[in-house]
Image 1 (cartoon, rainbow, N blue to C red):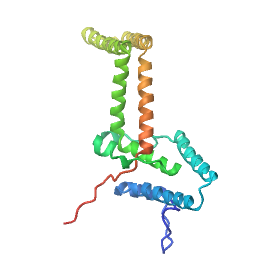
Image 2: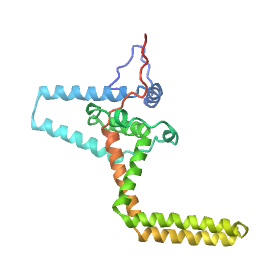
Image 3: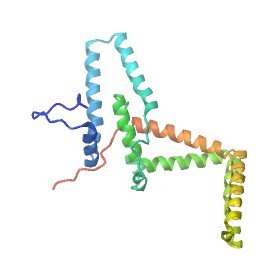
Amino acid sequence: MGKVFASNPLSLNVPDPAFESWLRDSGYLEILDTATTTSAAAVTTASAKETATATTITHSLLHYLYTFISLLTVNPFAKLTTDDFSAKTPSWTREFIGALGSYSFPSSPHTLKLRVHENVKRYARNYASLFILFFACSLYQMPLALVGLISSLALWDFFKFCSDKWNWDRYPVIRQVLVRIAQCATLVVLMLLNVQMALFCALAISYIVMILHAAFRKLSPSKQPSRIR
């Protein structure tokens, strides 16, 4: 960030985390993304004007490759909180997908990490909805897994019905034993009918879509500036 923002005349410095937190609270965190991207584009253009040798092209490719590989080291859930799921769901067309100009290759690993953390927080409900959609599609493609999921739910519903009818709460030991038996039966049903495979496929596809969208989606203003009349 020191390369993006010049020193002020009073030589006052603000720690990067505190500055990012202030920009996030103010709704202008996208300034970091825009400034870093613009600076990297200017450097690339200047280098291209000076020389267009194979070494320069190789260096650029290695830089992009290193930035993309750094995606494997980013924890997208590092700054995710439960409050992000209780917020309002962003618009799918205007905010989540956006226009074609809303996407660009991150200029550096720091920009990539910033985008991933912030976009996962902003679009947490959208990503959760996509996971549910992918899981439903996986169950549709694997009918046995759907049968297994319904069977396990029916088993626990039957267990609750019997517990209420015969008042198993008066016999805690017997109830605990029956709970363990029902858990083992549920696990066997889920494993035999490949429900775990449907869940794994949905998780894998959802994670890939989430991490790629969060990395290439530019940070958009979280707060719209008010118009002064």
